[in-house]
Length: 223
Image 1 (cartoon, helix red, strand yellow):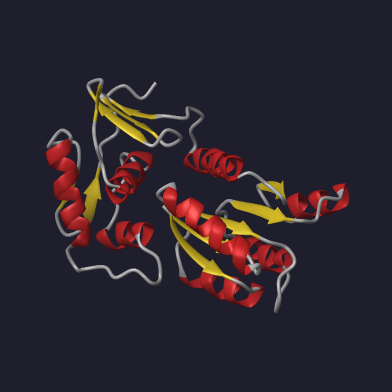
Image 2: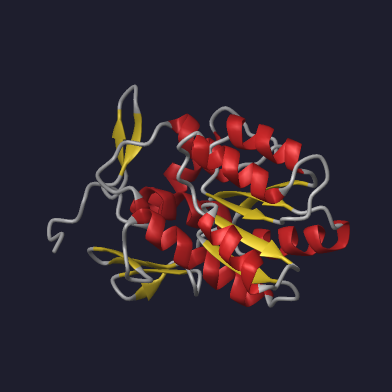
């Protein structure tokens, strides 16, 4: 999944970006509020990690503009402002979570997973589709009880398809969710990842909808 990190501290931004990428996310990083607002108008992010004290435009103003446009993507405020009033203002302005610096990267990752679960409308931490089980926290996939070794791109692609089971996702959408600004993407990259997933999992799990994209059907039992 593709995230936007908005942080003006170079050392902290680099560390957070590296940690989130190690967790398998594609991360675009900007260091001022105006650049964040422009990025959010142009790109389909799954979640935003947003500092408040930013040059050019405050984090609260970025958040306000995002919500005024009716964009509902999760926003996690990550800031040194620890006063109760600041937390209340952040959450009442439309943030979904608020984490105070200094923080633990593992906690940040867990909060992101929780927000993405909520965005997908599910409570269970694991994604289960028949005998395929994907655990975002442990970053594991199993098929009929046996572990399946996936690259981080294959894992992210499978998670995106499972999160949206029953919906057709275009190749462009899938490419945008996997790769950030500075990553080169070949024209057949998504197809290659799909091919590898089909070889490693059940061949019929991922269905091609000709001229539209790819999908995983909803499980037969959706209770």
